[in-house]
Length: 224
Image (cartoon, rainbow, N blue to C red; front, side, top):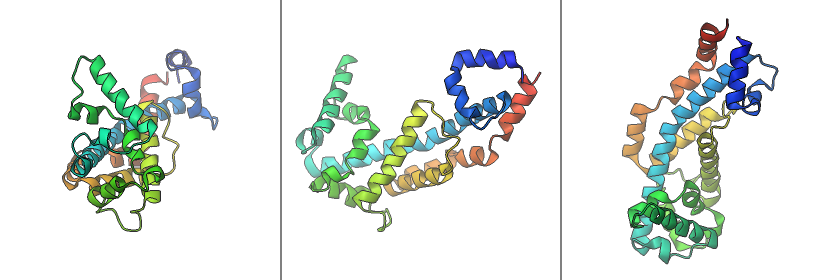
């Protein structure tokens, strides 16, 4: 491709960021095509991740509110790290000159906070069992254990964080399986949300097309 153009992009995106797309000795055109494909894959997964995260936190919040009251985050025996995250969420809201209402706090809490509720550290807490029985009753019985659910949610959290930080996922061999698992989790949590997802999810289209459309784009635009 036009080497001068690629060198300008390297200065913008940094050599370190683009070099990971050339680890197998790929040329500049292929590296740029892979970079663009990675962006599009992330964009397609954002849809599913958005619906998952909102569905998860609202389902868990509803279950915990029925278990311990609306201010469950102040009432339950959460560990020090979780309590710190609650206080940090309240602080962020106050810095925006807003009142830390229930809805604001729930929206501010990170995905890591929510997924931590289904981990071994809370296995002796009744609220965890209540979440699983209330929110995840549609989960297949062979997966409905804290160990399995923690593994599933942790994979989703890692995927979400990589996408949020614009990192490479294009090389993951199990990306299609991860998308399928993510969609299944939404189905467990909220059937209407899952039905909505099926209408707007375009991951399969992007994934099945692969990098070739971007190779064509690069070839037409910058191989001069």
